[in-house]
Length: 128
Image (cartoon, rainbow, N blue to C red):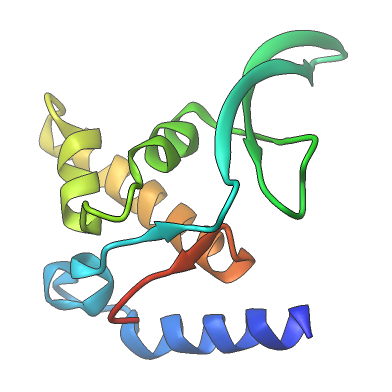
C-alpha cells in the first residue's frame, strides 16, 4: 500500500514537473505544502565522521527517532505551515542570496520538496 501511494504521488509530480523551461508557470511553484501530522525538525546528536555531533533530524511517522537532514531541508520544513506557497518558501530561503546562490538553493529545495512529497512527509501539495 505504501509503495502504491508513493508511485501515485511520483506520477502526479511527473505530470506537472516535466522539465519546464519556466518553473514559475508550474503548479508545483504555486502549490501550498502541508506537512503530515507530527512532522517536526529537532536538533539531536547524529553520527558524522564516526562521532556524535549536533545536527538536524526530521521526525516523521516513518522515522519517529528522527532521520538526519541537511540544514537547508530543516529550514525548508520549518517554514512549511500550510500558508506559504513554494514560491514564498523559495523567496524566504533565498533572501539575501545572489543569482547563482539563488539558483542552487532553488534546485535543492525543489528536489527536497518532491522527495518529501513522495515520501509522505508533505501530506498534501494542492495543485499537484
